Amino acid sequence: MTQLSNLPEIDALADGDYFYVLDVSDVVTPDKKVSWIKVRPEGARITNYKRFSDTITIPNLAAGVEGDGTISVPGAAIGDNVVFNLTAALPANIAILGCWVSAADTVKVRFRNTHASTAFTTADVSCVALVIRSSA
Picture 1 (cartoon, rainbow, N blue to C red):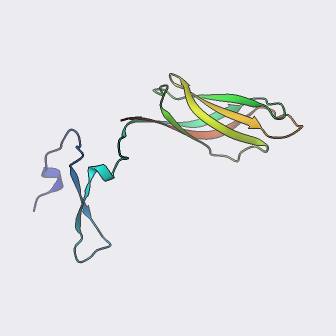
Picture 2 (cartoon, rainbow, N blue to C red; picture 1 turned 30 degrees about the vertical axis):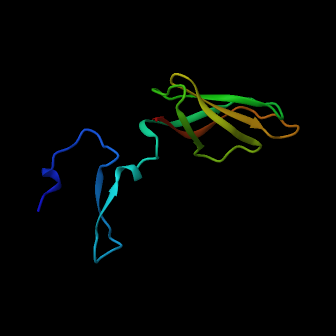
Picture 3 (spheres, one colour; picture 1 turned 30 degrees about the horizontal axis):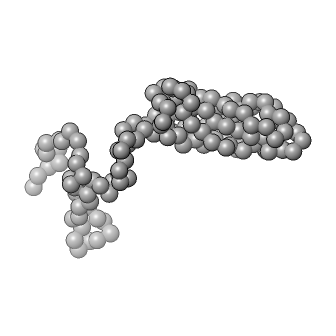
């Protein structure tokens, strides 16, 4: 029987390549295969992930006003995709409207004070961001 550690490694996967899968849900015929094309989204090749975990400063916001907070994510580039989440409770009357890479190494997050009459005083909030680069 061939040992996995004895097999040669390949440099890149092609769409026609397969992975071996041991399907534990099928005890009769557990040996299966899955094509590389099923592992990644069609037409996209994910080449780079950058992760941020720290705090973001939500700026002072008058009632009904929007403002941006920024975080530094080394390696982020304009055109990258960003997933952003707070790891603490969202402050009352604050909405997250969007996030994007605004410049090299910089992610902006737009906040809005949804309260009709009360201003929001700046706060630092724990967050995480994942910057993803993909190419067709």
